[in-house]
Length: 405
Ligand code: F3S
Image 1 (cartoon, rainbow, N blue to C red):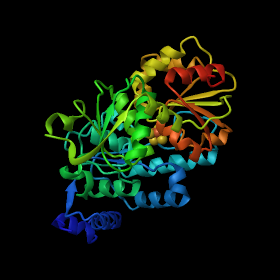
Image 2 (cartoon, rainbow, N blue to C red; image 1 turned 45 degrees about the horizontal axis):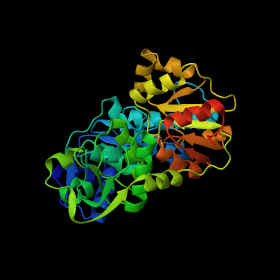
Image 3 (cartoon, protein in one colour; image 1 turned 30 degrees about the vertical axis):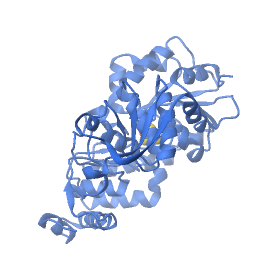
Image 4 (cartoon, rainbow, N blue to C red; image 1 turned 120 degrees about the vertical axis):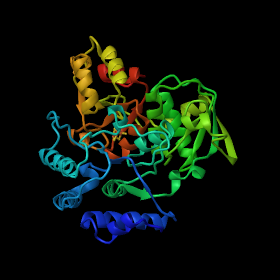
């Protein structure tokens, strides 16, 4: 690989052991992917912060890095951790203590304790064509697709290495020629809610794997639609970029976002139903847990939930957690949404999420959600049986204690 003098110095111990190790990781990655050189990055986002992924060894490793004075070189945000730092949700004490130590260690390295998978809702917004090193698959696909930034599906360690050095190997989606779609999806069915976009993402993600899908036939999309479509594509497949003709930025200025050879499929009512069935594993209709906010809720979603929950009471056998981050929660508190939500018995959480925390430790078994990503992972990570539907159906189940018949 061609390295600049600055990069060579980092590799030869110039800036301390953590930076040397970080550069070693990046050079090894660059060699694996045949990168010619490094590209400077403007920001990083580090994921994999849950104790589930770090374990005790990871906790010790990150605390050692912080003790060795490792410091990030670019604005760096942190993904969800497994604990709500504002309140006791009844999760095991030991888990919470260790989880907080992981967050603090990264903050000591100069990262922002954003604890969210949607840092772009909090002002960390990469620009068109800007090179970045973000981890968290739902955030990666959003930055590439909705914002037109240049990012690969980083893992936690490679994103940290990029943050400590300010660069990443130039390969994959950092190169314009790799951003063309190989599957055109003609959407013929109206997409009316987040659960529809989740079903679209789940269906297409499974089919396309790591390739880039291009959607046609969608007239308008709210930002949340992109967030839920992308998260579904990135979990049922390993999609890091999609295009929507006439909507996402690259389709507006590139001559074509399709490769010279591509396949075409249709997504109609039948495919939508298949997508939803794919996300449902529930058998027992008694519900004990409802989880909304994967990816974390926007302010608009919280305003809608406040309206849906007004005057209602959550069933005594049901726990309803609504996940967001501290910034959005702060606004929701000022605007009265949190009060309206929590008066019903629901809990507005910050910092954590169902998949990366351990709500299964509280004995929940049958989960209802409007998130395709959560529906995809919950059976594996928490051994949950999942019912998948739109947000109105989720609230109905939370109030009645039953999934609709
Ligand atoms: Fe975010 Fe957790 Fe879902 S990190 S995308 S809420 S699994």
